[in-house]
Amino acid sequence: MALNASPAIACVGVIGKHDQPLHISLFHPHNTNPNAELEFLFLLNSCLDIFDLRARTTKLLDSDLGLLQAIDDRLACYGWLTNTGVKFIIVVDMMGRPPQDPSDQDAPRDKRRFPPAAVGLRDADLKPAFRAVQTAYIHLMLNPFYMPDERTPLQIANYGGKSPEITSKKFINEIQRVGKAWYPGIGGI
Image 1: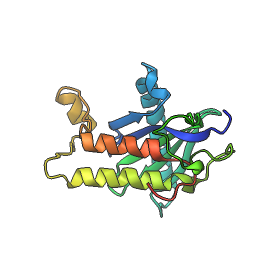
Image 2: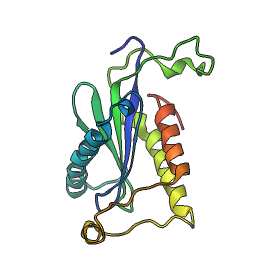
Image 3: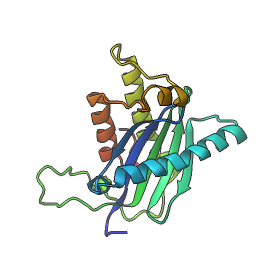
Image 4: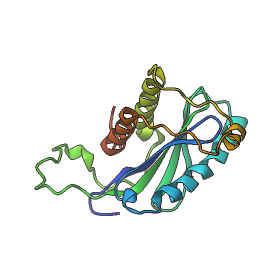
C-alpha cells in the first residue's frame, strides 16, 4: 500500500432488477484504462450470483449485504440490495488513491481523508456511500420526466438488444461526487 494511501472507491455499479447494468462509474486511476469499463462490467456481473445466493439462503434484515467477494489483495466488492430488486455494487481499491499534493491549492485540508494505512474495511464503512447512492437513485425515480425501463432481458433482446442505461447528468454527477468524497470512517456523504 502506498504511503498514507487510503482505500478508495474504484467503481460504482447500478444493476437493474433483471440483472441488466443501468450505470457504471469508474474512478481514478481505473478510469484511465480503455478496457476498464468492460473489466469492471465482468466483475460486477460475477457479483450477481452472490446476490441471488444470499437472497435465497438468508433472511435479509438490512439492505447492506457487506463484502460480496475479494478479487485479490487490491479489489473488493460490496453489495446493497434495494427492496425493489435494484442492486448497488461498490468496488473498493484497497491500495487507494495516493495522497494529494500538499501544494495543490484546491486540495481539501481534511487530515482524516488519508488516515494511517488501513488493514481492511468494516462493512459499516461503506454504508454512507450506499445510502448516498440509494438517495441519488430515489431522486432519479422521483423525476417525473425519467421513464425507468421495466423490460425483461428477453424483451430487451427482442427490441434491438440495447440494455437501458441511466443517462441523467444529475444522477451521474452525484455518483461521481460520492465516489470521490468517500473515505473509510466518513459519517455521511
